[in-house]
Image (cartoon, rainbow, N blue to C red; front, side, top):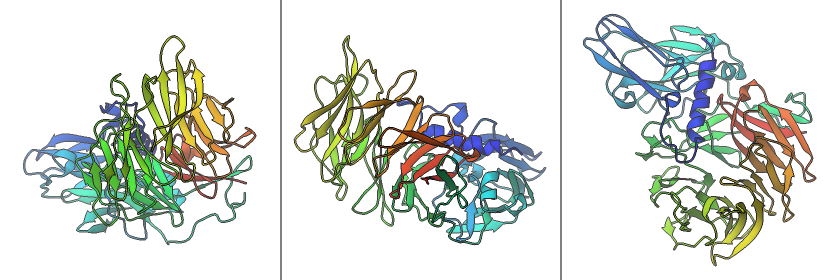
Length: 499
């Protein structure tokens, strides 16, 4: 079996998270479940190519079913950790009847389930195809089921009823970190080293870092959402948050923000704000439809923003005090803003402010970057960009006032300012994700290009090619040590350091 099936799956899950604003309708390319009626004569249910189920196969022998049944296979994430010595090498799937395969599957003899396997993940743990095994949910944990067949890119097991299954390998835990990051330890080019930090399950972006713990919200989790955590030290999964039920998983719950008070995870979307908590019940706050999301100010205050909808005047926003969940009154955006299309955290220490972009209409159309204080609603203009139409995107900010934006034009060129200096264009096209490091340098990625770039304080640009694991990049964060943490469409998590 071609492992491209699983690479496509991760890419499709990523597409669910980065789809255009307001597009909440799944296409055939983002199918995450498939059903078929199968009866006593037996039959085969196969995941469609070019879908999130590519490579999955469920085969029923004659008489396995006593009557006709509508059988379902669904992509399905589960917050329960695999056993300590197990590492996932593919996506988990649920087999059953009804919506998301949650209903009973009345088998009289076992059926045969084949799961896709990411061969790069197997190799990263020093294992071979014949080492791949399958774990199935059993009670409060997982049970190992020996495979009946293994091949490069697939593994097959028997099932005797409704099953939630995940392919994986058994390892001997050790510290795999590259402490010195020499070229011998982490092969790289052009003064960079690139290492793999494992394959966090269902990682497709966005993500957030707290120390050496990565937080993210997986998209394909059925009818509920929860935050997952991945240790950069041990390259293994940590306990997930409690879940929030009845949340549509295809919507963009972003950005992810780590609460400085209790280390819970905040995520915002059109339908409200989610607070994922560890050990206590997670909470959903419904604030009405919004397209702007949330920001975390330099003083640690979370601001939740309410924006213009369908051309209506901008309505301002309000903030959520994360420790209590209370709300403040609305604040106004400037009247000259025809539409406020984005906000970005101002990371200046001890300040309660944020940046925003407003669309200035008329003949001389422009995008205006400004900064507004929360307490007094004071607006300070940062820069105007004549001719920059809707969706002039701010990408990142730094505590010293540095900002980076991407023009929405044919070139999609970076605009960068260091500190409080003027914006300057950077001669790189198709710019996408970007983040500052603590030294004022900027890491960024280009759309569809397996390469990472770094811009120093003098606007000098250097780059490093990413491995085959990074055919497409989906998220970028910068660690406190200055390295770039990159999520890829294959599910691999990469760290890139400058030598």
